[in-house]
Image (cartoon, rainbow, N blue to C red):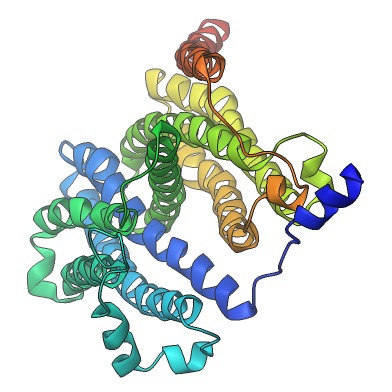
Length: 386
């Protein structure tokens, strides 16, 4: 009798339609392009170019401007299709093709607020897409040669606007009920932002590495600095993705067995394996490539430095980009909840859960610090051996 009751309350997994898969993956690709490129340009590329050779700096700024401009176009196109997907999901059986009509989209954006809501959902999406359009136009303006002279100002202006695109979309139309709901919103955005910075940053640096044929023989020093700076950004992103991902997984997965007995769990398991591949590649960079780059830099071995930073390192990063794109392709299939599919109880936080979370954050901080120190120690050890 009890088993039958559980089966009756279970929510079956529903495979998302193709248009939903493409629009959602495309939307996160657009966010990765806009957020990842602007953040990486501001934190990694711009500071490294300050003391670089003028010719190398000019080549890399031009390629970075092109990447930023392309990211604006990708964001604009992805944003439009994502808005149509929201309308198709909000309507009663509206075909996705009908939702693409501008008139229907405008009606959706102007729809009044639901009962009990402090703001209409359409209004939230109207503001979000207005910011998205401004961000996209701002970045796409870098296609104009005269605007490229101001690439630093454009990138720094577009950065907060790109972040606002995802943050505005997360604004709740009703007051979240309880601390758990607030944490869901906060950590979900931390997951999105850190993941898009990680993937978009890798893609930008790989694109910039494609200019190696036009760079001088001393470009290895510049690229050693670029990889070093981004490795710090990537470690922060890994920590944020890990903490937020564990929270979100705990909310939707009630037991380890649900990872292979539910549709949600299987999709999540594939995503986790892909992310572990990304982390493994990052660890290879940190413990094998970065020490060798640091040693070549200290030994003033320009030939080895150029080979490591502009030929060997980008090959590994290309693999990371491919894994990151695969993660985006899997994300649309992580829909619903494994707990709901298994008729499991909803997750309820407690002091024990928060204490475990605090311990995890502390452990991650210590591990990242130890990783940086270990990488530096390996570089010194190689220097001593040489």
